[in-house]
Image 1 (cartoon, helix red, strand yellow):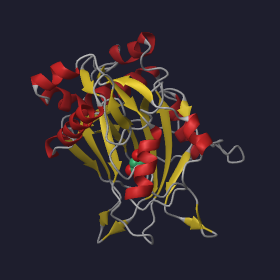
Image 2: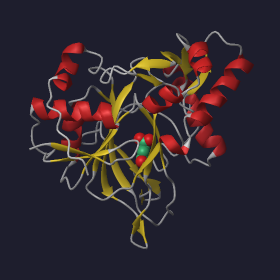
Image 3: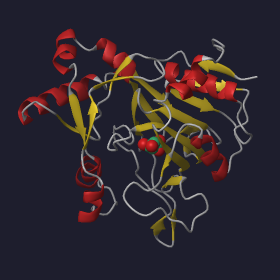
Image 4: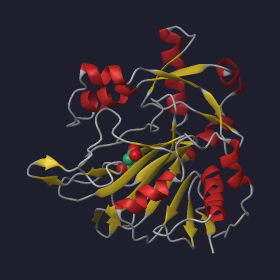
Length: 307
Ligand code: SIN
């Protein structure tokens, strides 16, 4: 039987009692959705999953985004399942070696925003018995609640503009990324898009701060200097230690997180000969704002083991 064991930290829970290689019962999906809203980051330990299993599980949450700036490689089986890895074959990386290695939220650069990321740990580097290459999160429900009242009042009803090219160019210019420059066509494919600065979370019904250093470029209706000052404040505020939680990986972990209620980064603390290989699906919010879908979570029994 499915159960939810919270980490006791500001985010995170472990889900027991489900085999993700098998079809999922609606009632279990409801428990998972509710736990995503409550805990943001869910770990399913010791899962034996191929890329097809990762894809099928991910599709329960919405449409899977393929390659955000190009053609999805149709020759690969399950091309919707991306590879994050520093492994090279014939001198070329087999996947993205530095995806997400600074603070961001996936897919805020799309009109239909991202809902969840689903990652499966195939190879996790360790040193002196300790796992490396963790994924760190910050809790945007808590951040919203802690924001000063005058900032909440100034930002109420405001819109943030999110730009795919901001993160890509930042990684190339400031993080020594091997990713190639974006072509003019790729830039045209991803024009900046608006989202509310404060979003009502579709599962919890509570407000979150929906801005992130990776993609949020400016706030509409403020001049550039005022907007930059406000975003600098928000980016520093949302990264205080009191809101943060790190997932330390074990091989065969399936990790799913709520992109609407968290921001995250991949921690690049391993060297090129310490191998990390993760499969990833990025899932868009094509279902989660539909009240009929959310009903599954509302109907779910509250199953929690407290550690
Ligand atoms: C991501 O940003 O989706 C990647 C996170 C990770 O590799 O830990």
